[in-house]
Each structure stands twice: as C-alpha cells, then as structure tokens.
Amino acid sequence: MLNRSRSTTVAVTGIMTALVCVGTLIIRIPTPQTKGYINIGDSMIFLSALLYGVRMGGFAGGVGSALADLIGGFGNWAPFTFVIKGIEGVLVGKISRKNEILAVVVGGAEMVLGYFITEVFLYGYGAAVVELPGNIFQAGFGMLLALPLYRGVSKVLKNE
Image 1 (cartoon, one colour):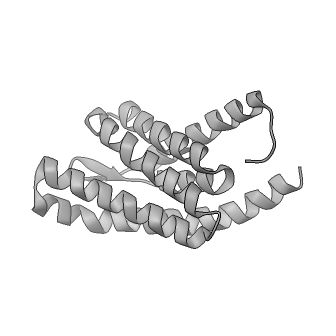
Image 2 (cartoon, helix red, strand yellow; image 1 turned 30 degrees about the vertical axis):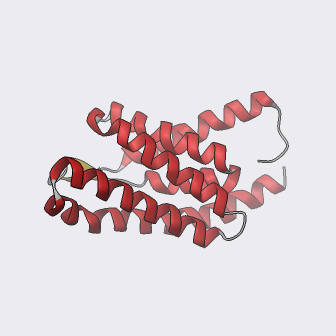
Image 3 (tube, helix red, strand yellow; image 1 turned 60 degrees about the vertical axis):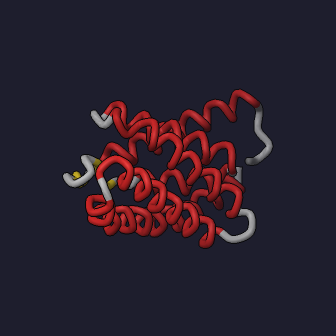
C-alpha cells in the first residue's frame, strides 16, 4: 500500500470491504443446485488485492463477501465464503507483486476449487460439478473487470 496514515488505511479498508460487499450483492444469479449465486464481487476482491496487497485483499475479500452472504440471505454460506474469499484476496495480493495476470488467475482458481470442495461436502459431487461453470464464469468475468479497473485506478492513485 502507498505510504498512508493509519486512519487513511482504516478508511480505505472500509471502502474496499464495502465495494466487495456491494459488488457481491448488486448482481446475483441464483444457482439452485447449491443454493448459491454467481456475482461480480470477485472483481472487487481482485482490485483490492492488486491495489493494496495481501492484508487488504484478504480482509476485504473475506469480510466483504461474508457480509454480502449475511445481508443477502445466504448466511449458511458466510463461514465458507469468509475463508475462501479471504484466501483468494491473500493469494492475489501476494502473487500480484510478480505478475498481475497470474495473480488473478490463481486467485480465481482457488475460489473455484474452494467452492467445489465445499459443495461436494454439502451437496454431493453432482451438484458441485453443475456449479463449476458458473464459478469459472464468475472468476473469469471478475478478471476481465478487475484488470482494466486496476490499471486505471492505479494511475490515478500514483498521481495523488
């Protein structure tokens, strides 16, 4: 993260967490097999982690996504989401220092795998397989949104 005061860091963390939450809630495409939904929150997790690194990506990803589950009526998913999306943000933040594209690919793959494992445990292999295309689409679309957003926002932040 850029050299900022502690209060600025707290404020930016709140903003990025809220963006993840809103991004998760604003467009929700239900997936009946697993009682989940497809959303664009991953793009905001990627953006948070690319801009501000491991801690911000992990916190905003985990907390913002879990809050969206709680607010949106999917509270049963919140603990799983907190872990899966938190790890996603941490991975993207860590890898992005070397390669931004690889970072979002790895983060997206972790999200897909994390939900697949959870869904196998909760609903069985068949339901988890049916959910795979939606999760892959969600990760891919998140990448397509996040990378150009990151490039634009990072230019603005560097000019502060």
